[in-house]
Image (cartoon, rainbow, N blue to C red):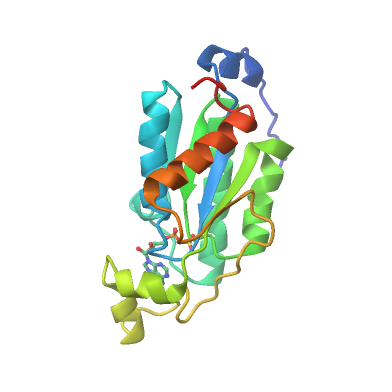
Length: 200
Ligand code: ADX
């Protein structure tokens, strides 16, 4: 695969780019069922980080399937490829000094762990949206659970396709907190992890 392909270094280092942005880049990897609140929390956090002059990027599962991943479906192999591409993209953004917020179901542990391995140890922060299927299904914001139950969508996560819960996620979000509290929780984590200034 690497025949006749030579890695090209860039002039500016990852550290220099991060220093310029006054932050330590990372991937905040939101995982959970459809309707678990990944996108909502990622966007609320993104807004707060923007107000704090942080440099961020949100990669959302539904949105990326309009473009970069529009050729992929929802069988296991397609999901694995989906996450692989997003992982590679996230790594490029981290190397550019960006705090990346990703919102993908990413149902398979091995796929998420592959992404973790792409970056440095403390650069991959897994955020598990631990919202039970019953609540996601009750919300059914997009009407997809109803379709899945009626057999109109196959391989639907939680119904006819598996979701492997994280064992050791860095951040665990359950239903007992509200959106603001969850944003604060993650902001505090980012401060303690040195990603954003302590005083922000
Ligand atoms: S992933 O499993 O490959 O990580 P991804 O996060 O990109 O999934 O896309 C999930 C979104 O696609 C869901 O939020 C939902 O809106 C939509 N979707 C369409 N079909 C399915 C399906 N079979 N299973 C899960 N989500 C689906």
